Length: 83
Figure 1 (cartoon, rainbow, N blue to C red):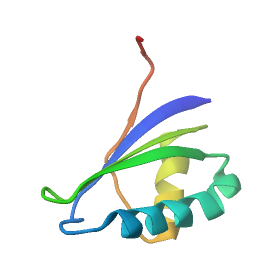
Figure 2 (tube, one colour; figure 1 turned 30 degrees about the vertical axis):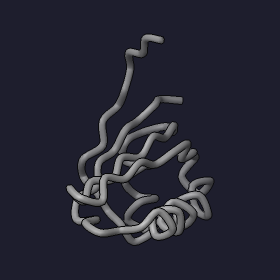
Figure 3 (cartoon, one colour; figure 1 turned 90 degrees about the vertical axis):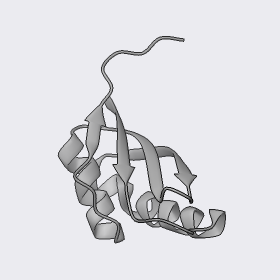
């Protein structure tokens, strides 16, 4: 499984509860694509949302987001990690 970070725009003014609901829509269907959404972060002032996931391909991540109602083409594979 690869690790991915994706970025969404246009979420200005979104609340933590609204982010939670969007994340839950992803989680509800993630198994269909073999993806697991780990965590999501929000900057409501810039309208940016960042999602950390693991899955087989970035296209699988994109399909889940599209089906959940918040598509993005900005998905990055993260092949290198340091702690």
